[in-house]
Amino acid sequence: MNSTPLWLSALADAAQAMPVPPPMRPPAQGGRESAVLILFGETERGPDLLLIQRNDGLRRHAGQPAFPGGRIELTDPSPEAAALREAEEETGAVPTGIDVVGRLPELYLSFSDFRVAPVLGWWREPSEVRAADTGEVAAVSRVPVADLADPANRVKVRYGGGPMWGPGFRVDNMLVWGFTGAIIDSLLTLGGWELPWRDAALTDVFEATPQGLRPVG
Image 1 (cartoon, helix red, strand yellow):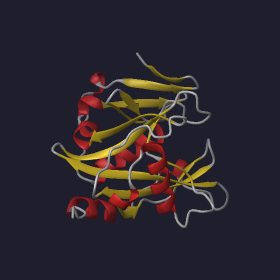
Image 2: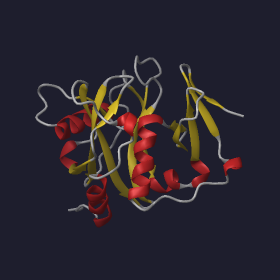
Image 3: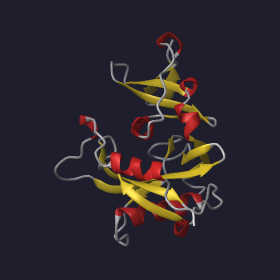
Image 4: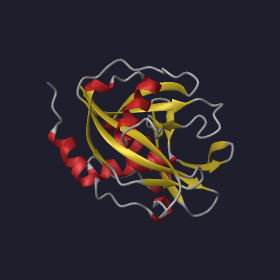
């Protein structure tokens, strides 16, 4: 049996107290409940994360990389159950091979009015994954944490042409940013994987627009 590694148990403990930026703090009431699965596995290259890329034609988050997940249904007994169900529906990941090891603080997406429960999982028995729900998912990737931490793959994303910016990652033909990028950035710090960024003059910057991301400069 591939038991939960000590590094992930330590990360799960640290993640419970992960600081939540003010714009992502849930309101006292309201918001549609949802859950995502932050699924760590391990290969010969070390720890990795399961990510999906959403289809371009979706009403929300079109074309964006993300963690598997979605709305919590009335038939779901818990956010953990919802995250596992959505991961199976979207990627074919077999829930019986996944151990839930913790949950991050609840986060809020104001533009879509979603309260998100980020569920942390360990892929004890990895299964084949694919774009199982082709209406929602364009591609599925297992992305090594080493690639996410590599300063050469890190970018900055500016929002709305203003001073606010967030982290981004250019990995496996994807540009990961927004909500997913912010969580990955925090996990790299909590897990002790974060590396110093490149010189600011060498770090690519993108701007988030209604049409998607565009390079700046």
